[in-house]
Length: 263
Image 1: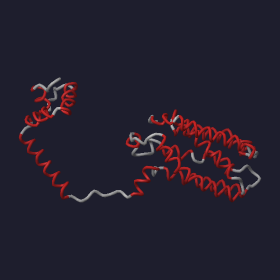
Image 2: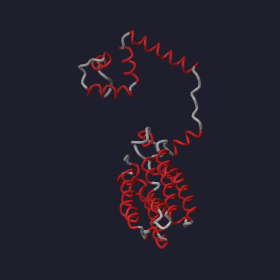
Image 3: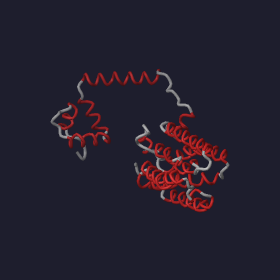
């Protein structure tokens, strides 16, 4: 089949012969994609009723295109929303906001205990990140992952949306509790950058689960049980958090290619 399809295989293909093997079917279809002459022979071999049906379908489609209604235009804000976020992240953001509110209420009620707002701040954005870039939560995952903007660029857009919805409740709670914004902001940004960095290797969802679970088990839970505020969330730790956030961000950008893989 280097030049044209022989008459016998083409006739068998046209008739839908069940005895035609898959390799021959594949070769015929590949050749037909690039050969107008064989496509014309295929049309000639088709049974008259089939040609009549195809002509009727073509006429109907052409008439519908000319006389049918204009395609509905998607609103600009909906196009923008799909570029920056997925709707499935909303319940998770609401859950995180509720958790911050509960932590704030407990901090006000028991000021002598370690601040739950500070203990929650580093992992507050992680659930939203896991949902914002996940094949299990995004119905359009395959289409999104195959676009030219997929990878770190799209992930950063969705990260911005997650941070924009999670950080304001933390800011309000921190302000009402009279704590320095850096105490909750730098740990939150550090864990966000670390999740994106590790997510390029093991998947954002897994990275969020590992980092979030590790923080809760190694730092938050012991602090609650012992009533001692860990050193990692005290003012003396701020330079280390700032350096970690900067290093994590730079490494994430340098490793941007890791996010081209579908996790």
